[in-house]
Length: 226
Image 1: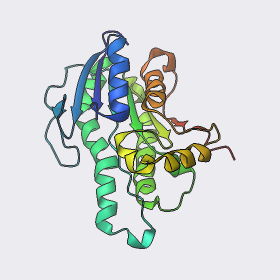
Image 2 (image 1 turned 90 degrees about the horizontal axis):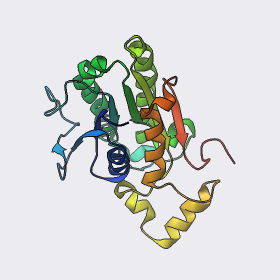
Image 3 (image 1 turned 90 degrees about the vertical axis):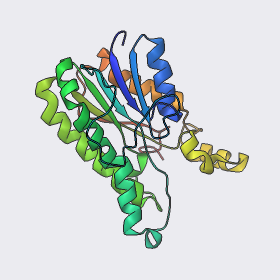
């Protein structure tokens, strides 16, 4: 990790912040972006842009962390709601990767990590919007892994379950909600940003150099255990 140029979108909050702290401690060169710009470079990935300011010439890793949690019954989800889910989760990732592609190819050993959700593999009510958008992310992950393999660019995704981040604060806003969320997971607790950051660190490291096109489930057993 030492000396690698790592671009983190959403690097000032939640999982992105935990990952940035982890990578910084290991000596990585960080290039942090977020919609708010607080402590990072401002970048709204839900809008078209020509380039990303301040990118290094060589990019060793890109991590795209922005997401949404808008849980509604299907009959209440408008087409605009679906479009917004896609803008943040899917098209935002596409825009970033298109802007970073040349830098990634110059690396010779780059890694890309995108984010899915446990709700793609495991059908969950009220998740139609986010599951659809993240399903597109999983398809993009596998397609780019195949297309970019000749350039030695690995592309993987992490699919977490509920994680204690500002984005999920409404779902964990009381002791009752937190306890109920703990009980839903076979390992008896919901996730922390550090849980997910450690998984991403592995995907960015040389230890995962023979791994691409994979969806890594970091979900307390939610996706596969009953």
